[in-house]
Length: 201
Image (cartoon, rainbow, N blue to C red):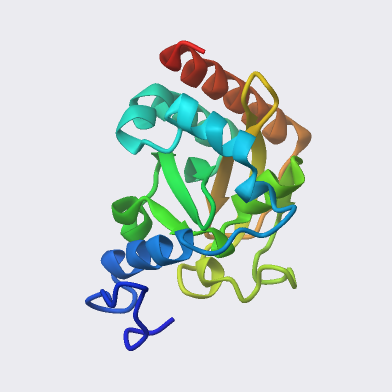
C-alpha cells in the first residue's frame, strides 16, 4: 500500500514508512472482511481477548514487562513481545527491547505477523532465518526492518483460546533450543495467568 492509496475514510497517512503510516495500515486492515475458518475471526477467541483486556497496551505492558525481559535474557534474544491478534491487526501488547516504528506504533498488519501463524495453528513456530525461509523472505519485517529470526509460542486463556503469542526476534539468523522454547512456554503460561488474575476471570 502506498501513500497514494487511501483507506475507507480517505485518511491517507502522512509518509509511507513512518510509525503513523504503519499504524494507519493496521487500522485499515483491521476492517477486512471475515474469512471463514480463520481463527483470527473466531468470535469466542475475540471474546477472550476482550475479557482479558489483552489488546490494551497500557494495561498489559506493566503486567508482563518483567516476564518478557526474563524471556529475552533466557533465550539470548534482543527483543521479546507479547503480541495479541485481532482480526486484521497485531497489537504489540507487551514488549522488551523493542525500538523503532514498532515501539511507537505498537501494531502491525496481521498479514505481516508471524504470531498470526501461531494463533491460526495453535502451535509453536520457529524460523531460524527469515531471509532464507520461502514463507517469510518477502515479509516487510525482514526486507524493511531487517529481522532475521523468530520463535513464538501460544498464549492461551484458561478456556484454551489462543489470544496471542509470546515471541522473541532478532537481527541475526540463529537456532533455538528446546530450553529456549521451554523458557518461552513458561513466560506464556505466567503471562496468561497474570492477565486472567488482573481481569478476575
